[in-house]
Image (cartoon, rainbow, N blue to C red):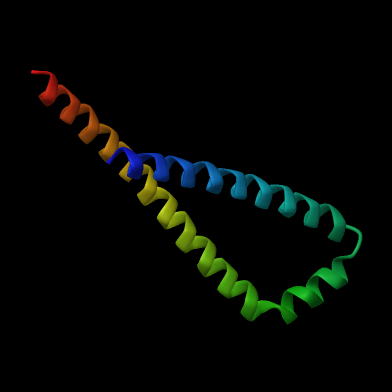
Length: 88
């Protein structure tokens, strides 16, 4: 269980880094396309299908992220209680 907890915590850290990078990219896009609204509109229309797929993948990742947070809590709880049982 300790290995599983370590894996979950490492995965959470990597997703946190990914989300921070994604936020920076989003801010960069907003700044870049501020002076090019027509280009932004054309690209948004052209890439509707791929953007929809990316949205679904992102929502799936957020779902897995929330599940991972709960798994970390459960594993921490189980490890704590297992340690307490061994000590007694």
